[in-house]
Image (cartoon, rainbow, N blue to C red; front, side, top):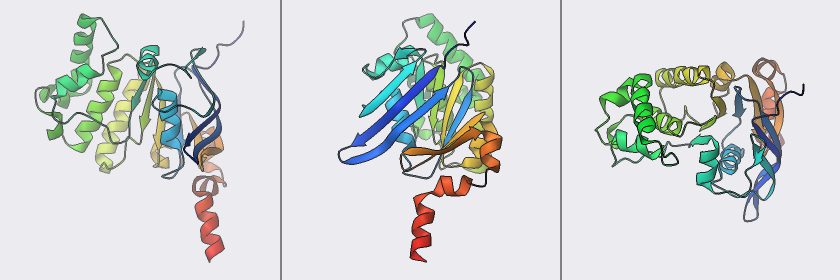
Length: 249
């Protein structure tokens, strides 16, 4: 019997903004239930890659398939309906809306109102602080609480794949510990995770496999243990930055 194909398959993906190429011919596969990390410095192309997968930006080339169905030419809402959710960098919660109202926005692709309400109540069990503050404006939450809200909102679409763009950015280490503990809980529920991080150590601690990205392409990949111990990691991560420093010294 043939093994099942990957849940997400990206082939030759390119993203351009005018004359600037942000992603250069990237290939990426993720199996159902995996936790895959993409690490790299600011400006490496990580956000552009997940934005293309989520349907936020249109690829300049290549293909994206989810559960063997092409995603290249469908609207953002349909990508969500297919089972992909994105927690964007900076969280993008709606500050003037209540916590509960923010959560409801995560379920806009669903039509099962009773199921949505049940899922919201379950999210308050997973994220107790959100339950305590469900009627407060989301703008009154701390940064870590807003990150929890952004994750909980994404889960309201019942995704098979959740993508998180820099979930530790701007948060205190103790708060990041809490966020990553929540991600472990989500993974234990069978949800596939694609994690984008500048903080490589955090990504190593959670991920099954790692891709190192720099200059719009992948420069190194393997299991988290393999990449962490690879002597080429620093050069792969910093890439042109190291070369530029060497040339100027």
